[in-house]
Image (cartoon, rainbow, N blue to C red; front, side):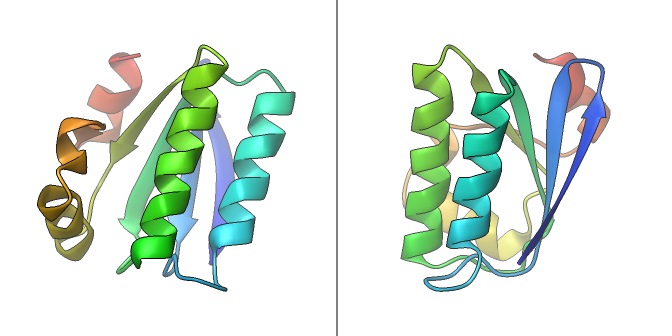
Length: 111
């Protein structure tokens, strides 16, 4: 998995590209979040447009990232969920935890 970082105003957008699975993508996501917290980034938007799938370990890492950011007083939102990922978040009831958006502009302006 690859993660590209970009900023819109004071919002850090992480464009996640590829599957988030055990052994693939977990470390990259953890490192990106740890670096963001070190840089005092408190508004983080995960862009899932190019994430076709995540397994339970990947889901756990997304939740861990959310929790770490919340503990630091930050907030996390998600944009562009693919159907498979949206179904997984729905089944696990995590859609009720995360603020999700279909349009990046709306997600950024919601912070």
